[in-house]
Image (cartoon, rainbow, N blue to C red; front, side, top):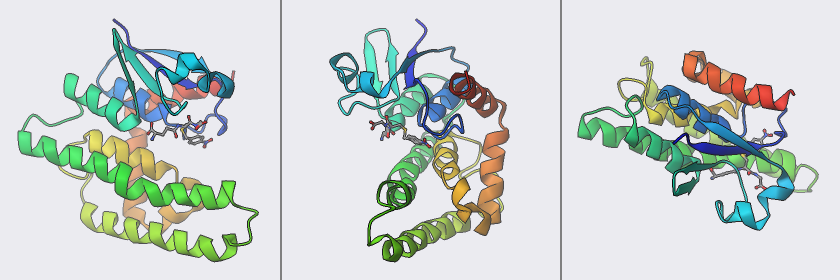
Length: 212
Ligand code: GTB
């Protein structure tokens, strides 16, 4: 059965690929799994039919037969475990790739999300001027550590994996801030991710929705 994911009817980013359905589309493309997309409005996301799939009323969700998943980490891991292409066969290398998925979501993404909060949700609050540099420095510290670990390698641990897919997806949200440019090896890492044909297909698919 062809799985169905949900995505914004119209993403607030106008098709820059920053909404989280892009990483799920990317994973589906990497493993060669065709999929369908059900587009949902902000209003529909908060209605009972969608809340039954996603308790927090968000996108993306993933449905396959009688299985419904939410959270991009669990969706990408599910795909990576069931199809070849996103996790190494060796058990230890597999566990390390999964560690990188968690690192992307739990260690690198949170300060990046704080930046979005400071800039977008709290931009007009009196504390923003003081808070912004602190948040930027927290992100820089993570990027410095990540860049040190990546070194001259193409990917975080051997061949491209779901860990890289998640890390590149998280880092992409920084592009507009200019922070990535301070770390040329990470800029190149993100560019390698974006150059993958599977990413290109995923990006084009979400762009088509958002520029209709
Ligand atoms: N932890 C969850 C996951 O990884 O799946 C987070 C899911 C999530 O935040 N979904 C967002 C959502 O549904 C869309 S991706 N928001 C609606 C709501 O909460 O009511 C976040 C997002 C939105 C917009 C942009 N943008 O325009 O640039 C980027 C990212």
